[in-house]
Length: 232
Image: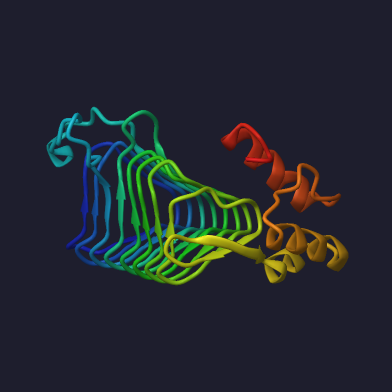
């Protein structure tokens, strides 16, 4: 474990093995950091949720009334990024994620495994981002929006509507302009199934059954659980 001497690790912070914490980073509890996580210079993990109805508690004094932050193993949080405490449950970031510089994750967000948020990306409270999703530089996701697994969100996109699994969305406000076929190929989806989903999205439809394959089945199960219907 490497913790820079200028870093602040407050009460209620649990660090796994092999964690690296850079200069002037601040970690506030309750917070669980998984094995092998790297946190860059100037990051703030576990600040109070930005809610007028929530106490702006000084967690560095041991006031740990919020619901915590959980970061899975192998995740990298680059410099100047911020992750807030949850207000109703933990703010969760999965395993193997990359949060690039100045990423902002608000209270109660959920990020799956291997999610990438590029520099300056911002997630409003309660946003849910599926595994393998990639958010471009300065992309913004409105609170309570759902971005499906494997989705690709363009630079400076403003996501005000849910984005289905493996969707390719860009613009302000963001609209789906087809499927992330490259991401699908990386997950073992056949070329025929990828082309069919791309055609559906270009026609403005989200299929209830996108086809066989572990990646598609898992993605639609996650989508249905978080939106209530695969055809939303």
